[in-house]
Image (cartoon, rainbow, N blue to C red; front, side, top):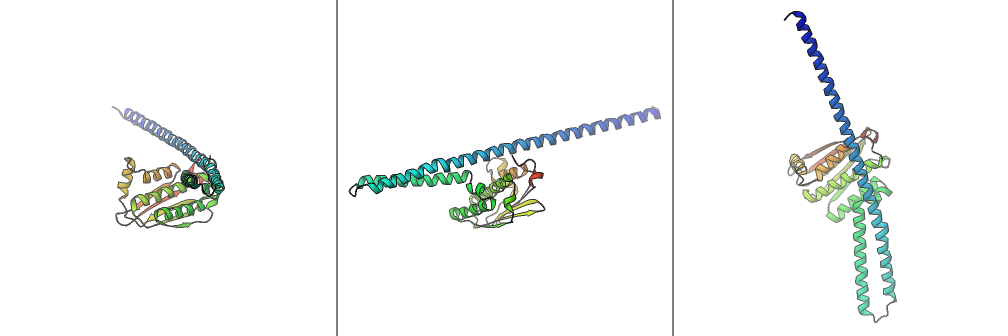
Length: 262
């Protein structure tokens, strides 16, 4: 084999390597495009779910809730018009009114669970304040809020995402941590949203908690991580047994997070 043949072989090898590199880059670009397309589709599904939650919550509150309120009022009118000697009838009507009142309270609670109206009407800071009070009253968990000013200017999708993350994180604290206190800190740093939720509970092994989510035994931490990544964010969990747990996430601004507004 002469020198010219060697040079031709080297040139052919370079050309083949260049071709392989171009094909690899094309494949990588296609994978990235597919991932972005998947994220757009997943965010669209997420928005549809939230809109359906909003619709059902308002229907419960404004439809069924108002009908129950009117029925309670009518029962009160009938009770007021009963003669003094209508003892058995009065007792049954009072029981019916009490049942309607309990049903009304359950309906309102379900409406708030689906989609708290305060989030749409008054914004994220008010909704997080309501969430903290709710966990304090219902679960004896003292939640301290440290919220940055200017939350009302956040994108609607980001506000909903942050609320859902805090809601899920506090639910996990109640279910698994046996904690007495939790802190929710929300900051805006260089346009990025930084959220930290920590507790003084029993702690856990982060790897084990993530593995449980992947195996379907618990959707809390894994669900939070997936939602954050869906919007181009970063998720971190710091915990160890006996020393509480802290989750930290960073979310990009709406224009960097990728089509966050419908």
